Image (cartoon, rainbow, N blue to C red):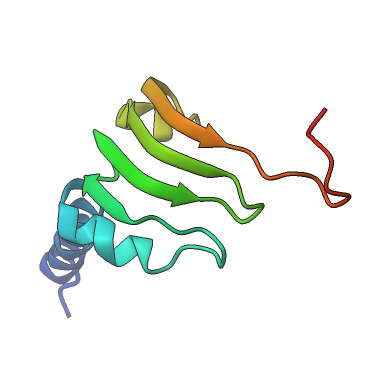
Length: 104
């Protein structure tokens, strides 16, 4: 049985699926559904490979970020490196510590 054409077809399907997840707003929305508990955002704009904007972001520790804009260099991921080419945050609110005092 010839495996060459079937293997090629499978690789092409996997590549197309990966491109869909990383390079489309729909893929971003689907992947966002897999996020860890406590990580919330009111709005998502863009693509996972960038540019990406998150509005009304809440982190698990209670930190709030009104708007986070970021863009990355996707090719760096092939080398195991996350390289941000743009990172801008607005309206960061840190939670008070457990004893009701201010953050140090």
